[in-house]
Image 1: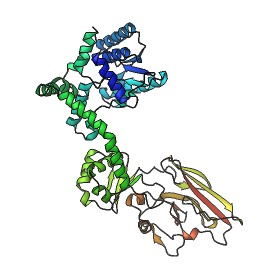
Image 2: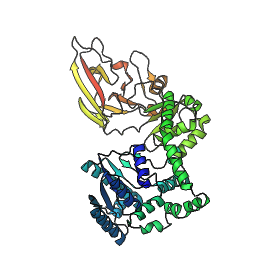
Image 3: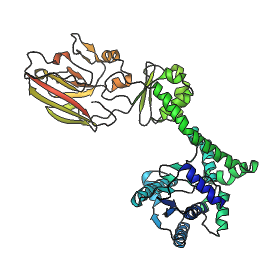
Length: 459
């Protein structure tokens, strides 16, 4: 009865699921999952079971399946059964067998949960598993996130047995005379987790009989602190975040004052959180922090998904610039420049109600000055134009520098070029004075750029 009460208290404390909803139990046939099924049934929760046969252990896999079928029949539990060709999946997707099984399992759980309207999928991780996970993270190198181990609830995945240990589970099953199956691979020490389970943790528990409990308690305390840490981190990062100072076609996704970061409490932690959200590695974080006093304007860093540039005391983040699929504009019309960019070119007569466009990504120019085909390209060294409102020409690079545009933004600045080589438009920033609409202009061409990128509010 004490075992049941501990599990019920844990469910209530962490609000894992409701008593009215349907809960799926991931049932392997091992002691942990069998105990989880029986506990939830005895606590009068509405449960159904799901078993995955990964076909990795030959007859043993089929034995587990038969055991689960029999158990569900004896307990009058609805069973959902699925078979996977795990090895083929691993080969096709170039992942390990362990990762393949995980991806297949959780993908099926999500699909099944949606189909039968299950509230959660309950998995049988317990206190000793938690200690193994934290220790494994420590061995591989971890920060605070790894110290919290597995959460009681993560999305629709619930872990009601994190409050009990392996011995508690085995005693519970023994009291009820309930058998279970044993995965023979658990005894192999070829895997790091198994060596932790079978060799290292038993040695540590011999030194201190409560070691696994202490590690699990530490994980729970870190998990409880995590929201507080995250909230403080977000507040400090927001304090360092400042808007971009120019209207750009490919704007940064973040711009942070480095001095504010360095003066904040736990500056390295802030940098870690900031860079990790842009997919930079822990090694890159350490290298950037170690060289923080030597960072200079123009330094560029790249992750798998983002680029960052140091610019006048700021670190500025960008997503990669989309590749232009069309750069030649032969005539008026509509063009798809890239998966996220569209260009419209139209011509019309000037009438009494005409007003030149003042929008950043929509220009009106003298049609008599335009010579097709037009070219859309990135700005290059030596480009110059006559900025609207000026008489003298200006190098594009100097113009961008005057606007305090950083090196990465300069490299991705688009220009629209006339067939005669003159630049018509510094896209989003300024048109060329030579193409202005004057009093003698009779026809105008309107050029408008549209972005389909939901993260980019402009144009």
